[in-house]
Length: 235
Image (cartoon, rainbow, N blue to C red; front, side, top):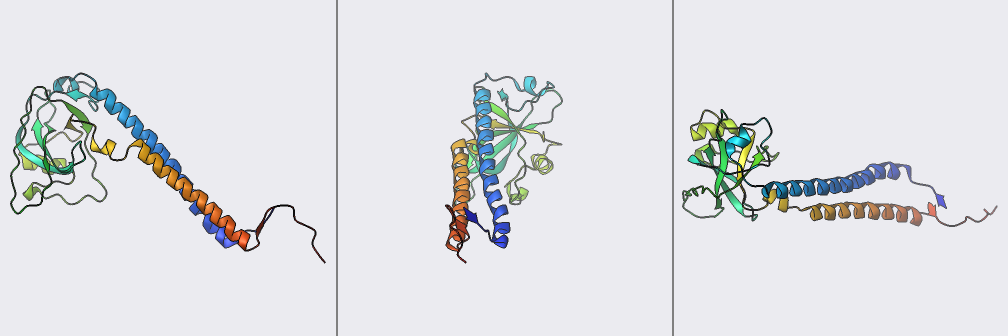
């Protein structure tokens, strides 16, 4: 085989090929990570609920614990997001007191589907029943491209603990955890399942293979890549 690569083209091609391969393995890692999150959620949701003071008054982290919430009170916060079915709208949160000296925790008490209408209807909170179950989740981080919050319209696009506490008339709210209503697997776990990440990985690896084939064909057409035994040169 004879191979005489174009220097500039090869120098440019190496980082492109490396990036495609890296993205493929990154998606495989995300598939494994997502499968782990789903397994953790399924395991946690199958556990019997415990009282909030048991979860929040111990030294262990309450994240992933399933709770019963005795009472949710006060004003509602309308936080833009999705419900378990993937519908777009406003997640409704009120505060509940878990016990001990812990500050109030935001508990999801309803969902308002996103509608386009001339009038603005004030949603009615869904009363929390003793049989309702909630799962403790970490305080959601602000997304990189999150829109601004509008407290005067009670429209929140990311969780801002000090501003939310001021809106609710509380001295503070728990900035580490929220209580999500346990109605089904959360949208962030079902939106892109592990199989979706594997599909993305196959796409990136396929692009890497196609890139190598195009690179080889380009050199072959230019006579810089030849397979087989090279015959003797003529003088």
